[in-house]
Amino acid sequence: MTEIQENSWQATVLTLFPDMFPGPLGYSLAGKALNDGIWALETVDIRAFASDKHRSVDDTPAGGGPGMILRADVLGAAIDSVQHAARLSDPVDRPVIYLSPRGRPLRQQRVRELTAGPGAILICGRFEGVDQRILDVRNIEEVSLGDYILSGGEPAAIALLDAVVRLLPGVVGDPAVLSEESFEQGLLEYPHYTRPAEWEGHKIPQVLLSGNHAAIRQWRRQQAEKLTQQRRPDLWRRYEEMQRNAAAVPECDDEEIER
Ligand code: SAH
Image 1 (tube, protein in one colour):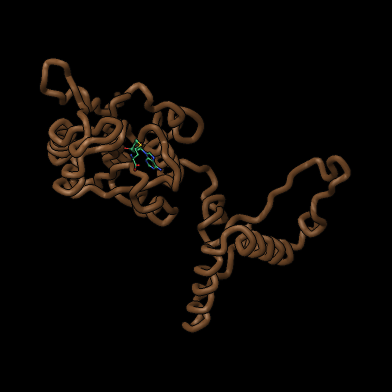
Image 2 (tube, protein in one colour):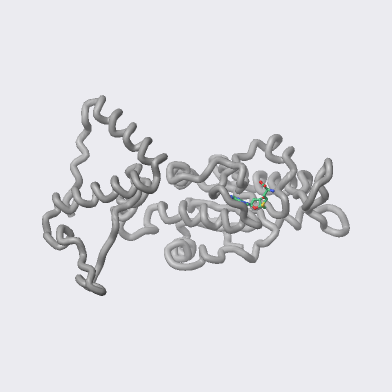
């Protein structure tokens, strides 16, 4: 458990498997940022809040059916303890998020919002999920990683934190990298190439070697549009709408800075 520092983006993860953290978040950009105190990670073992002598955290579903359900009383005590401690130190409340396949699918927009805030309290489910009352009574946001079922919320929490942390100031060395990425302009990213100039008979597209920055920009934009249109009709429709709306209002100056 890492000690929470002031001014860093603060993540608290409620889990039955605290040893899974930081896991992949201890490496590369996120790991360095964690060491540098740009963000802080605290894990809370849900089992520590079990009150019976068997330390049980789950029980069979009311109404019957397969699997086990995380108990509202245990989870409630864990959340309350975290929020109580947080209110003593945090100037603003952090959002409480339950990673869940029934949640709103996580998009870059929500990632950006979370990055701009003070941190997040993440709840990782296991088994068949959690007692519904905890979500209703504690007013918890549900966020999904996608339309598939994981065996637990931990990999989803790790993915969410990875996405957030790389947007924190000072984590990615060249912030220009971030603004060019998939989803940032409503498009998937254009294809990349690097040396060797020819590989197995395949050349790097000539325009990229031309040194003509305007032509390169135009080519990349066209490629990004083509890819998005082909692969993600949902994004493409939204992008077209954005373009139409932008055309309807007086244009703002979006000249790119030549680097
Ligand atoms: N019975 C549930 C799935 C439970 S999976 C259902 O059908 O909706 C066990 C736990 O894994 C969940 O409580 C949740 O925390 C996590 N999980 C599974 N899939 C996920 C996804 N797509 N996104 C985020 N969390 C997920």
